[in-house]
Image (cartoon, rainbow, N blue to C red; front, side):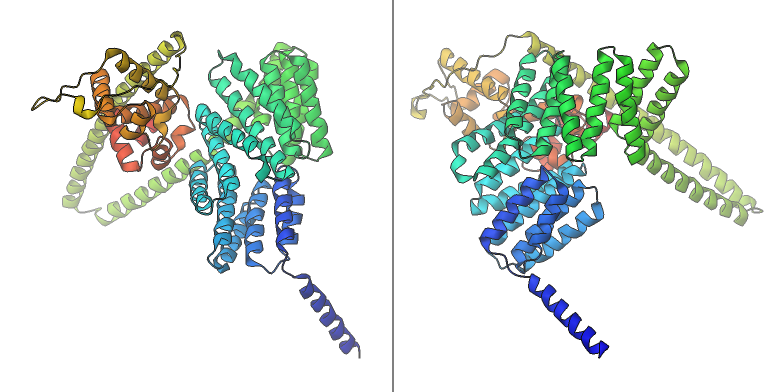
Length: 587
């Protein structure tokens, strides 16, 4: 009897569980989508709860989206295995969806989540590839909202590698699009997009200022956009804390310590309220740094020690921990407490070095040991085998001599090649520094208004039999050159469509005249002129921005409008004498 009752109970339980699985309506699906997206700027666990609700659906489209979103949420929680597992599941459900516009849309969403995940892992090149593929799909179905998201993410990648002007340009275009097309968004979507857009614009202007600290107006722009972001972030606490922390940093750079102090305390309050340990740690470090700059050393130590305590407890030895020990060492040195000064300086130097170089050092050490051990085993075997055979001993000696000579020859050649590369690189660096100084000293270029230059019809131009002899009014020629320089200033040459016909249209002339003027004024063909601008831009970025050097040749080529890595590498070698990778490594 008990067995029958147990069986019936299990049957009822299984039936009730099975009945929980049902296909969501389109309205329920869209509502859950929005809740998941908004939770990413709010509460990761809440986002996973909404994902769980969507996973109750039987629709493959819903399951693909839910698993894609979950993959990014788990990445934000630093659970990489779970993140990869969820993304693989998302792709498996995507395959089951019949070919349609809806499948394309879901696929573009998955590319977005994958790009964000790769970004979190520091794989910027892979992130860019995902965004570019996503844009192709979104363009195919005319999903402008998703295209704006992808463009914003690409703008942020440009910010990370130091292309602040390009980042600002893209984000401003997107901000204008949002304002002009508010009607295609619902209220929450619009506010969330605005919150993200203004936070990102503030970051870009702040980063641009850090690179050009004489341009104080950039700091004013950063402050303006952070404040705008805060007004749109009432529902998005992560964005709110990010913008407030950044605003505090701006105040600190402006020497407004009172405002900076208030903002940092606000972040501590919000982080406690939302149980966010990361922002709590950063805000405490910022307050310690603030009080150190105000020479309130005892007060600074309270916050810096809190940073150490939290970091050690959570085993999160990040930049806040290292910088905290750096400042503590300086404080104890000023307070004439050498033992404590030594203790914290040692933590900073030892741990920071380990943190930065751990993977590289381990790889070098392991490879070195493997190489030495293999070589040692091989030599022992040879010695044992030919121990008493004079002939082979002599042969080995000759071999060793030749090996040493070969190694010495290769070392000398390598040193000479490196010296040659370094000389050329140093000359390039000096050239770019000199150009930069000239630019800074020169008056700001005036962007002229779009004045139409009417080029004569081709039949009005006289040609000699062998050499074309074009004549053009000097004033008109100067206007065309001014417009060309204005396009350079706007970095138009980074676009893939920066062709002779495109530029001719921009400066209101025909291709024949434009080609003639470029050849006359710059002493080169238009193609050579365009390539030189792109290559000079890449060289400047590699010299001034260490993150840019980590990009693959393909990614760099695409960032400056080359169609493929081969033609870019060829142009780069022609200009510098070395490949892009060699140039980056030598720097």
